[in-house]
Image (cartoon, rainbow, N blue to C red):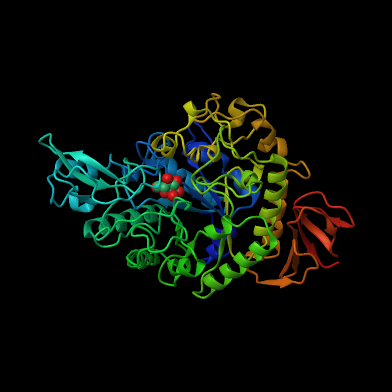
Length: 553
Ligand code: GLC
C-alpha cells in the first residue's frame, strides 16, 4: 500500500458504506489468451474499476479446481488454479488494487469441497466409519442392500442430493451428500478437523493481505440432526429463501461457526470482513447472520428479488433498514450477480423465473430489452443512493443484458445437465464482458477466444464505446458513484418524502433528494438541480422508469 491511503483503504469501517464490485474471474479479462479470464487480466484492468469509482472488489473463486461448477468446487483452498495464474499473480493483483485504493475480498467455499480435494479422495479410499469419511457426510443407504439413498433430499442443481460410492473392494457402498453437484461433497461441519481446516484457510489469505471473504452458501453449513426427509414446495427458488424448517438451510448450527471466524478475522484488525451469501427470508431472520460477533454483511436477496414497483421497494427498504439496524449492521443492496438473470433483463420480466432457472432459446418469456435497460438504470440509480453498502456485478455498468440465445452445446452450468436442459441455469449472466468494440473478443482476450460465446451486438456495450459518451450506462454509473461519494450517501440516513403518485418513490439522504418514477407514465419533475439522471429528463417531466438525484435549487 502507498503511504497515503486512499478511499476505502483509509477507513476501518469501510464496509459499512462500500460499493463492492464483483469480478467473476473467468469472464472478466483474459491475459493468457486461452479464452478464460485470469488474475493477470484482472490486474491489467483494475485501473478501469478505480476510475469507475468502486471501493472494493470481490473475486469469485480462482482456487485449484476441476471447474465442475466454475470453481465453486475447490480442490485446494490455498492455491491458485493454473487456469487463473499463480499465487504470485494473486499477490500482484492484490498489491495493485490496494495501491489504487480498493479493498479486495475473496470467495470462501466452506459448505463443500471438490471430489478432487485430497480429503475426499482419502475418504473414498478409506472404509465406512473411518476418520477420513467423518469429514464429509457419508451414510449407509436404505433398502435391503443399501441401494436407496439415505433420505429424499434433492440437489439445488436438480436430481438427488446423494451419490453412491464404490468401496475399495469393488462392491457398491455408502452414499455421500451433495446439496449441489455430485462433484461437490458437503463437509460435516460438526467435525473438528473441518473447522480447523477452514481457520487455516482464512489465515492463509489474511496473511497475504486480503480484506475479507464472501462466504458461499452461508446458510447451508449445518444440517439438522438425523437428516430428516424434506420436500421443497413446488415453486420454491433453488436456494431456499423463505422456506421454513429446511433441514439443510438456516440451521442454528451455522452461527457458532461465524462467531469463531469473527475472532479469527479480528486478530488481523477491525477492517477485515465476512460477507455472507445466505438466501434466508424474512430479513428479520437474515439479520442473525450479522449480529455484532458474527458476519459484517450479508447479501440482501430480498432486495434483489423485489420487482420494480414503488410500494414493494419502499417496504423492502424499510424492512432491510429495520432488520439490519436492529443488530447494528449496515444494510446491503444488490441487483445482479453470477447466479441470477442480469437485472437489465430481469426487470422486464413479470414475474421472473425462480433463481437458478435461467433463460434460453426455448423460454416462453421474451423480455423487452429497451424496457429492461431503462428500468435497470433507474433501479441502480435508486440503489446507489441508499445508505449502506451496494454490490455491483461486472458488466452491469455497461448495461449488459442476460444472453438468452446461448446454444446448448456452449452451456456449462451443471444445473443444465442435471435437469436434462429443463433448467437453463446461469450461463447467460456469465458471458465474458466487452472492453473494446473493435478488438478480438471485444477486448476480453487477445486471441479472440471466449469460453462462452459473446453474442452479436456485444461490441455496442463495450466500455470504450461508452466512455465519455453522455447518457451512456457507463457514464451514469460513474456519475452516480462520484455523487454518492461526494455526498457520503453510503453513510447517510434515509427519510421518505411524500409523493402525489403511487408509482413514485421519493426520499432524502443528507442533502440529496432522490425521486424514482416506477410507473409507465411521466410525472411532473420535482424541483431542484439534477445531479444524476438515469435517463433523459426535460424541464417539466420525470419520464416513466426514471430516477433522478437532486440538490436543492
Ligand atoms: C453459491 C454460488 C454459486 C455456486 C453455489 C455452490 O450459490 O454463488 O455460483 O454454484 O454456491 O457453491
